[in-house]
Image (cartoon, rainbow, N blue to C red; front, side, top):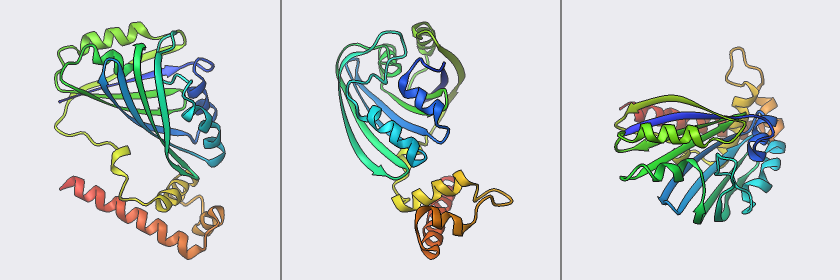
Length: 239
């Protein structure tokens, strides 16, 4: 298998959805795409951030008229169905199914024209940058894919190649979070954002508890359980 990674950078004002990530530094999106055919694909997207920032994302995340797939100046001509799977104070998970595609210059659908043996995509959004990892069985047409993606970019978008690497495994943070409970994940996100794990610490456990409206003992327990699960996962991956 081969991991083809690249970045697309957006100028402000080019894409309404990306503009929210530019405006709100706490926002981060991780998504898995699967292209079922040149005419349909599905997306599982997790968006995290401060509650006030997430509130600005909600409308666009579930608006089935909003085109978040196209990388060209032309909007996708397709049918879009969106569902909210998880709604937490600092996290949203949405499922989007795009079908009946008549025209759409998106990364997954462009790749489907060149890759015959199946392909999987992971996307990360932060600030003005969308990072793509494309997993393919054969790298023989990656050059054509690279050229096509570069040529299709609309005005205000720029393409940057990261790497093409042969791999024997592929970890996805989005698909490996089930063992960390929602309430543990929430306090872990806040702890990282507020500098709890920095040296010296920028926030105390009491301050974290106050921010989340929790007793100190509850905050301590959830944070310990979250870090314990992550430590176990890390060790398991090294064995």
